Structures are given as C-alpha cells and as structure tokens.
Length: 213
Image 1 (cartoon, rainbow, N blue to C red):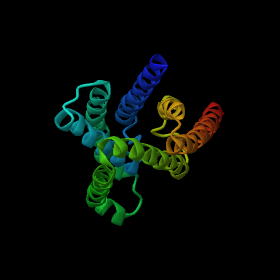
Image 2 (image 1 turned 90 degrees about the horizontal axis):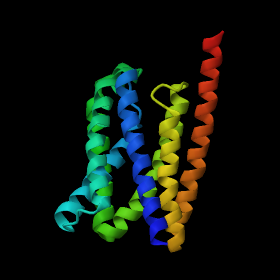
Image 3 (image 1 turned 180 degrees about the horizontal axis):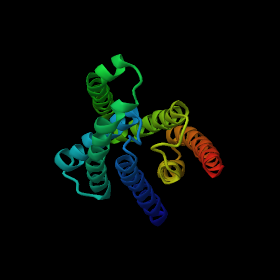
C-alpha cells in the first residue's frame, strides 16, 4: 500500500511540474499568460507558504518540501509572463490602467486566504484542505479563461491533461485514507477538468478546421 501511495504522490508531483513548465514555455512562445490570475495567486501563495513552513518551521527536507520549493520557483516565472503579457489582453483603458494595482491586490488576497487556512487549521490540515479548495477554484478559472478567450491561445492539451491527473492522483490517495472532503472536492475537480479537456479539444479542432480551409 505504501508503494502505491508513493507512486501516486510522485505522479502528482511530475504532472504539476509539467503544468508549470509548459505554462512557462507556452507563455513566452505565444507571448501570453497560461494560468488565470486567481489560480496563479492561490498557487504561488500555497507553495510559497508551505515551502517556507516545511523548510524553516518543520525543518523537513522531504519530497513534498522539495516539490513545493521547486513549484514556487516555477510560479515566479509564470508571474513574469502575467506581468509581461496579460495587460495587452485587457480591453478597456480603465482595465489597462489598473492592471498592476489589481494584480497586486489579487496576489495579496490569495496570500491572506492561505495564511488564514494555516492559522485556523494548522500547517498539516491547512495545507491539505486549502489545496483542494483552490483546485476547485482553479478548475473553474481555466474554464472561464477558455470561454472568455474564445480560442486555445495560451492553453495546451499537455497543461489540461497533466492538471487533471495531478489532482486526481492525490484524490485517490485521499480515497484510500477515507477522507470525504478530499474525495468530494477531488471528484468536483475531476469533472471540471474533464470538461475543460473536452472543450479545449473542440476549440482546437475548430481552429484546425478553419486553418485548413
């Protein structure tokens, strides 16, 4: 059983690393952002806070601490793509004017929310439950981004599929533990992620058909 759990954790770590790396690669190549702002804010806050907690509070240098640290560093590059390219996709002059203050405010709110989970529920439970709630929010945010862009710009099947698997694998681990919260939120994420994969594939097929004409 321990081997299965270890494999699930490793699979999740690899998949999420691929999501971040492909988001960075695609972002710079297409000159756009690949992760919605609130998803990015919740991610970098969660990974930064718990990387710090693992390394300097728990004094742990285990697999999760290393993963959190690596993900946090990758998130920094995704933040760079947001600041470099996202403003161009805002339509109104007012939105462009308030781009930086709005971004800073969202990032601040995300850090506050993650800290509240840590303070209220402790580092172990706070890390676990906030991760699944933010994954639900992320899954919704990706669907909204696909709909608002009306194209596959900044979105790849690699990101979509790896995001789905990256959340599904620890959900299986949670199911083995019998954690109802993780099971339910994990299923919600899975349904939303499968929808996103299906919709993104349809959008890409439409784009390919138009390009072939």
